[in-house]
Image (tube, rainbow, N blue to C red; front, side):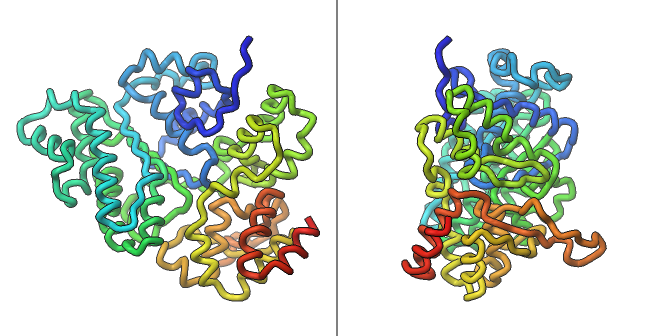
Length: 421
């Protein structure tokens, strides 16, 4: 039998299965979603921890388009023996990724969003045959990218209504990296314009939408104070601190050992553990999937994830941070575990105004993790959100040593710390 390749950079579930890449089966995520039955779910995880591939998997599972062809993708996978296989191919699905929705100005960002919506509307051109004259006119203005910004704010809502009318079934809306455009807008100085747009874009589709079956979002942070999700009483937020779903983003050790064994590299598990393990999601020990997949492909131990994970906002925050932050970064790099308060949500505006917020962003972005050893805290205490944090592994320690300490402490301290690794 031909050896399967490591799926480096493959985020399309159909491509991964049909082209015979090695796949670590995460399909029971669908089971969990259907058991929970949350109307809208937000998963926050670090970049390149499997969010996009899982969203693609969910799309191909539920999508009524090409349902028979898509069903074959799930043959011999764990979900195929679940009672929830009966939900396969039942619903129209809108899948929108905002991870690359960037621009140096709001005008450029909005132009890119119009192109994104054009591609999605173009995919569903066939629904026009069941629309009335007015609906068809509104569809065409978005499709042709000639409508106003106000109309684009509700374009996701409108498309779900059109699809519901066409199929006679409610719609599943998948939004990947929902916060990427907002974080970029903050970094580039057009935050207010972006928030004004996305508040309506998201809330109209997820809050006041009678055509919605389920909504699922992914991102890095839970941005709640901007009002994006205000009034969305049916939102279930699942973070790296949550116990549910913890095994579906990132890799369990058993999955890593099985993969290394497949690629005849099981003998290197100790080195792999030292470099890429160390994350605690909920109550599960998790390996960095991006690093593991790249390592299986290149067969060389080195930093794969830290250099591609995107850290402009972190650099910005560190630039404005006080001396105590730098002192703690040095302690983290030396292997210490430090107690920090982690709030339930954040506002992007507060990130540069509070040194406390940096630890939340470092945690949710994957540069820090919970320590297994947590202090016993009274659940009635106001300090229940205090966690012992630490650097998860050698890859991240090397990243901090090479980048942050070099920039903020100078070569002498960096050299001193790196020699202690």
